[in-house]
Length: 117
Image (cartoon, rainbow, N blue to C red; front, side, top):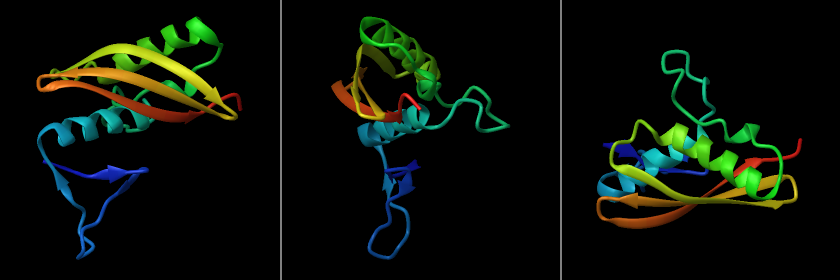
């Protein structure tokens, strides 16, 4: 069981204790963690995380690079298949839209990373 994460922090319940998640929400939570953690940022788990902050370029090239990086970050999650990956620049942020296929259906998520700095 995992703890609910929102905007990089644990989400507390009414007592201030981090809320637990399970099922599909647990899987999506794990996906976000793998995508938002910086790859190589955990000494004991150097393969955990993504390199999405390293994306450069534009257009279709950028989308292909993002797709490779997303698949790399999620390769350890057996029950998650990555579909279409697209990117859109909004000022100094890059929004990455990811279509996921889980055992219970298809989901689309978005992750934002700093861009062009």
